[in-house]
Image (cartoon, rainbow, N blue to C red):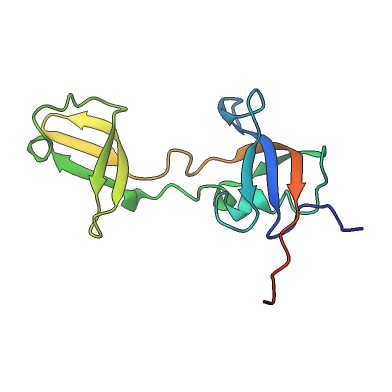
Length: 152
């Protein structure tokens, strides 16, 4: 009989929620179908995945994940200032607006306008949850062991 516990390489279906320390719910799928992921594949950060290792179907956890292991710290270097004329005229700029920029590699880089002072627009490129400890709740609904590698 195989050990049917969550481990690296296992496919799991989980229900989960993320809540900030002040009680604000960030995300939850407890009222929806469970999310499928393969442990160790990078879909979920290691800071969350490590708490799933060893669980069995039906088991639940509730753990506070420090920001360093969740979405990292908020860095001042990721907050940049732009002049208003660097934005398309048709964009209705306002505080809280998320705007997509292209980085040097032409990859999408989202930023949120955090301050507007005359012609100076301040944009925060940190992950919105950076710097926040998060309460991680999860329930394992299904575990599928990895397929043995064939030697043909």
